Image (cartoon, rainbow, N blue to C red; front, side, top):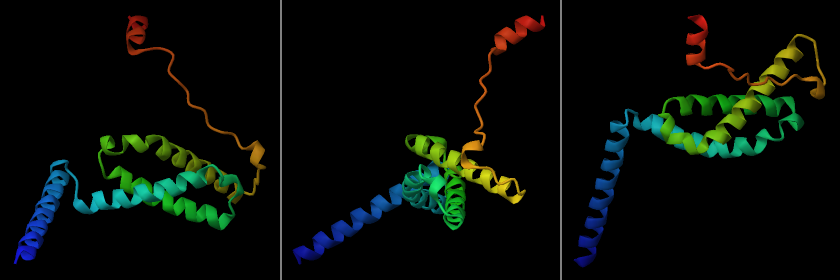
Length: 140
């Protein structure tokens, strides 16, 4: 008889914790399915992060698979708030940069301009040199 009480108490506790987790997800403005897809995408992100440093050595088929899996991750990450995945931001950006590089190389290969890997121009980030206050002073 005592074992049934313990099993019932554990079952009730599990049910209450599950209900609270769903309630917290709903309060954050997400669907449970979106959150679950984010959890799964986070696992795949770790694997793609490891591959992202070796993308120059990937075969065309592996690049296509990488692109498809990356697109799934991007859509899953876009459905949840940024605060939820800020710890994974560096991995996300590395995979995104690799995704953009592969897309650029494949796009250039389609045009028949098959560049060597060393001649691919990497985009640079341009930083603004003036602030809004300086622009206002200059315009007046």
